[in-house]
Image 1 (cartoon, rainbow, N blue to C red):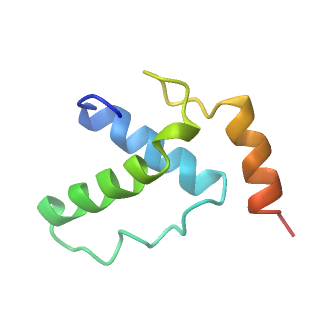
Image 2 (cartoon, helix red, strand yellow):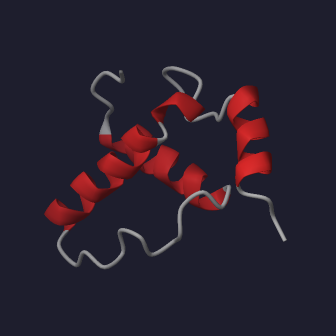
Length: 74
């Protein structure tokens, strides 16, 4: 289980998941209020926590392979 992530790490991980195509860009964009946006981003990042190298925003090699198999790019 992940420890407390600072806001910057949370944002970077969320952006990385969007960039890799795991998350849709607008999954949390429907929240106008910043206070509602952060919990949404946090939930999404925690859902894919095991994809990241612990303590970093890098997606691990094993997760990279799972992403290619599970979410093939067209």
